[in-house]
Image (cartoon, rainbow, N blue to C red):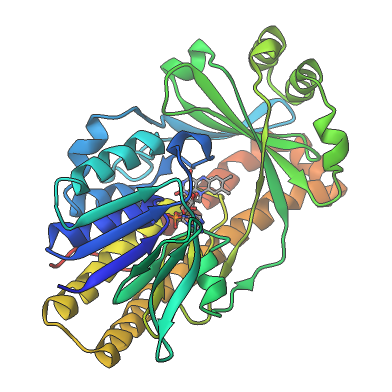
Length: 404
Ligand SMILES: Cc1cc2nc3c(=O)[nH]c(=O)nc-3n(C[C@H](O)[C@H](O)[C@H](O)COP(=O)(O)OP(=O)(O)OC[C@H]3O[C@@H](n4cnc5c(N)ncnc54)[C@H](O)[C@@H]3O)c2cc1C
């Protein structure tokens, strides 16, 4: 039986491992983190990601773990609602759903562990690749272990060590922002009506929503390149509450001020966006963020990663079961990239365009004044244009169906 080693047990690595072992392929999955809960993981799944999980036969698992549907998206400018769009945006799709990733990943690993030909190594990083005759033939772990494999999959995220060691280049987009991610006590209004609220005054901006786990609001504060992170780390909870409140509608401002004590220490999330010109070399394939790190805008990364996995399974499983030789396997890698790349390029473009829309106001004082003055008049047009831009980011660009 051919053996696959997968580096990284995020959504890409875990779903791929499960799909492969279910189809009789031997997999060793290695995850650096000893606890899934200790790393920040996005939660938003769009209809395309929910469909991908359903294609993989995993929808039932979602029902067993903390998840919460989003009821609407709302854009609040200068403390007033510019527009609101209810979920699901398209009548025939599921609403965007927040899914707690740690329990999802744990459940999927338990599923995979039902198979004797699955091995999970947790709490040890992959450090390097093993090579024989100019072909990758396994991985080296930080604890000195060596794992031989016919194929290595790099599913180890945006700073992929597999990508670096395989000498695969990442073409990065210029950095436009980072995020500070806060959690704080929930407000009953978000429990009853979970709105993803994007709030700004033209200079500062943040997004707030109720996460998948009960009792917590998530708040992502946009850090622009010129903000001094050193100074930011000195800001107290009360000062943060005042900052959030200063651009929020009164009911929400009151919540921030009354629950300042519940504001947890923020995590700084560095946003990397890019695409590898080649996702593979002999014996190695990159998938998910390792091949194409995604921006957090409009929650795309997990969704496209799950779709990478489906396409990979469609192409790789028949080749592995037919005991394809090395040349044939490398041709399969090339087909996988060819099928996935157009969607990734388009989605990254759409995210970039969304990002530009968000930057318009901070950069243009004149426009800001006009929008503030005419908010009522322009809101209908802005709302319609926003809805039209979302479709592909919600449903995907290409057809992706699990065929094997
Ligand atoms: C602030 C922010 C918010 C986001 N929100 C969302 C969202 O709501 N919805 C969405 O769809 N996308 C979101 N994204 C994007 C999304 O998080 C990623 O695109 C997605 O997680 C990619 O999945 P992955 O499995 O390829 O990589 P990852 O999720 O990064 O998983 C990689 C795994 O590899 C492990 N690893 C790393 N190095 C090694 C090593 N050397 N050895 C072994 N293991 C290793 C890591 O610990 C990790 O578990 C967000 C991104 C950011 C920055």
